[in-house]
Image (tube, rainbow, N blue to C red; front, side):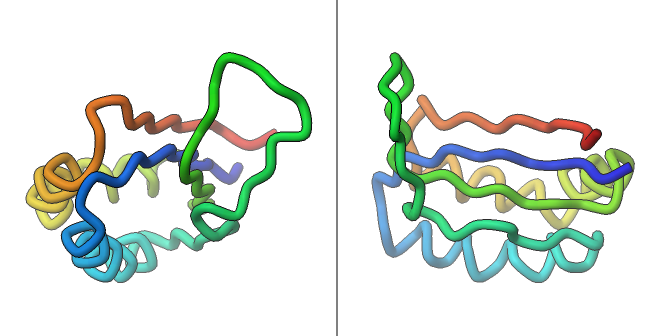
Length: 98
């Protein structure tokens, strides 16, 4: 069953975030992940309390593959880089597909 990573980023340093984005993509692909959406292309046709700035959805073959990517030694330094260039309000959700 596929698993999904839904991410909201509030970018505070565009140059560092671009470095993160280019380094994380091959790691995601290496665990079978693929981007389903582009960042900052969402629309919000109905209001609400959540007003995301940039959202991305990434599909993995299963939750084990998603966990393998997130927990990998190669991703650990990129978590630190991501946190240096995004807001403390960023959110990551991991969901199993139906």
